[in-house]
Length: 209
Image (cartoon, rainbow, N blue to C red; front, side, top):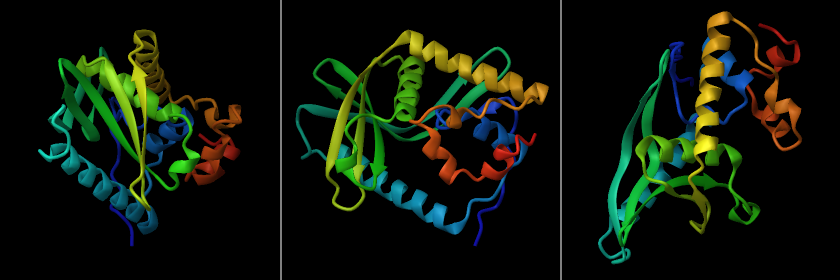
């Protein structure tokens, strides 16, 4: 069983992808592929868990000190030559006292292995805070097996956010010029694990364009 392949449009980019290896994202525009059923099942489990957590936030009995404001936000940032858009299904906006916060929900296999926030998730949250204008962020990790949670507060960093936008601009230019990006994930011990799950590994190993 396969999901129908959907070609991506150069000039329209997704906030959830920018923390991935830039070469992988480039390949996904040049050579879109179908997702197999096992990956789709994993994604759907994550979606179900996210919806459950959102309902917990909405529940009046959850916590009188925290007010649920919104979830599943539409997202769009118009840049000079391209647009960043999508729907933020894993984000909740809440209010505690006079302070609003963006909570990014991520599911994990084993919460015990999560001792710091994932850099990709931090990048996403920085972009959300920059675009939405709420500068208090939290990444909430939820264990898929037992629903235990662990959270990390993330402070807004304008320089980091602007660097992320430059990253989108760089991707856009490389796609338009048909220039293969650096094999980014291979450049660091912290990210080389991404290659093990990459659908484009064979192409990448050959530096194929």
